Length: 356
Ligand SMILES: Cc1ncc(COP(=O)(O)O)c(C=O)c1O
Image (cartoon, rainbow, N blue to C red; front, side, top):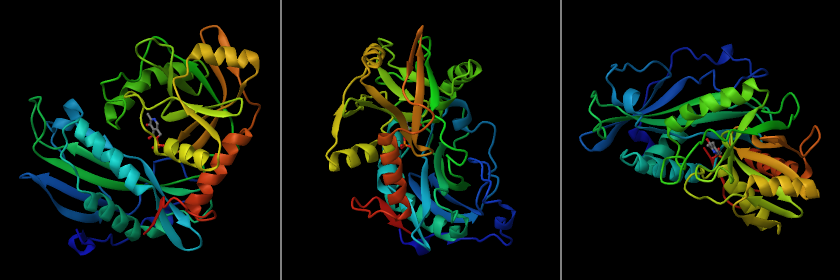
């Protein structure tokens, strides 16, 4: 697809002046335009950039009933002085494609995903926050558009990309998060859909997360569905442990979402000669490592916060506490490294950045 295949209908009055870039919240304000693409008669067609706005839907639209939908979450950053970088666009596309495949959504061709996103970000370039560590969050979403209550894969789909300027996750300082296991709930099972980005996973996490928050915790530490022993993820982030001088993370096993930030952490660690292990980590192992003083740091990794230090984990009557009130040196190194590459302060040796 050449970009001149995309119809661009620009907004007549930009809403940019209404945005307080010093006080951005997460995902509540949206840029001037959206990208739209439709699937019917066996093909994706009509790529358009149109003003951000409502999309009329019938109540019988299949996605509302059976959740045949997929989304992604990624970011564009101001890069050096006046450029814009979309971070790891190819890897996000690969995960999006795999997610679509799992729920029988026809593959959105890469040229539409990448071409549409670049053109949209170019169109709304002024919406990319200029300040360091702020970004334009990009949300691609595809959903079943047939009107039917019959349970079957839809024959028509809509694909949208919307953008939201978001603030520095750590503007108020870094508060290590407090986690609890919730052994009565599971996030995902092997063979299910926990390793892809489908909306139902997030709906299913709301009740356990709400209960954890009512007890004063920030997030749930998800354990495996079979033995309720092995650590999988934290909230909607992947998890890392600094054990002695080894960085450890659970392996991608079919029920963990393969995070792009997780990939970045692992690739950086390996290329800087750190000792890395992808292996199962049980909660009992963590308790005994903590007792032996071998558990140095715990942190989550995901697009929203980049790196989020974990201060404590509650599991039944056990409490694992790891850091004081700040990010540990290992977590800090990854945070500085990744954000440095995203903003162009550190050389992009691995070709993670796409300048639009
Ligand atoms: C369940 C889950 N795990 C992990 C992640 C981290 O993935 P990424 O680094 O690609 O944002 C996310 C966020 O997308 C998530 O929703």
